[in-house]
Image (tube, rainbow, N blue to C red; front, top):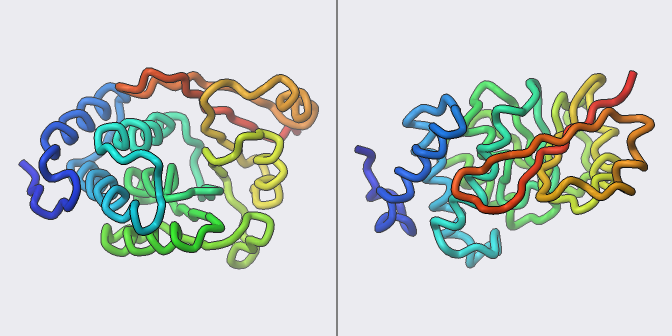
Length: 224
């Protein structure tokens, strides 16, 4: 049994939420340790606790936040390509921080132009002792990675337009790297048609436990 006294918002619902998280990890067939699960719960608690000050999410209820933020991000883990990852428009760290918690050997850079949200991530990363996360406060077009490094994987769930995501991400993408966009519905045909000559595009239907909404992961890799 994990100690729930360190939680500031979810302590009264801790057992219910932890059971739901464990059940979802099992359904998604993920290998996540008890320590990693604990960190996911702490991250959820921090997200809700600091929400008022930092305007991190419109979702106020812990169970809904667990499902729509944490589980939504966990659902992409089986499909993530390997390598250094950049998460554009990460907001409060979604999916970047969730990925970093669950994959401690992966280097993750989380990028957002909102200084408050990056401040929240920096604080959370420090308290959770995540050594594989680099938070950056910048717009993507102004972002110059250290030593001009490229990323094997670039994720986002912030872009409404797939073409906008590709345009922003491509200059930072390593050769043979993958763009992986978290979407609700499959992108509009005009979005796909504008890209299909240069990019191989696939859509993976995601089954997010306890979420009765459509979710897809749209993957793009440059045609050779």
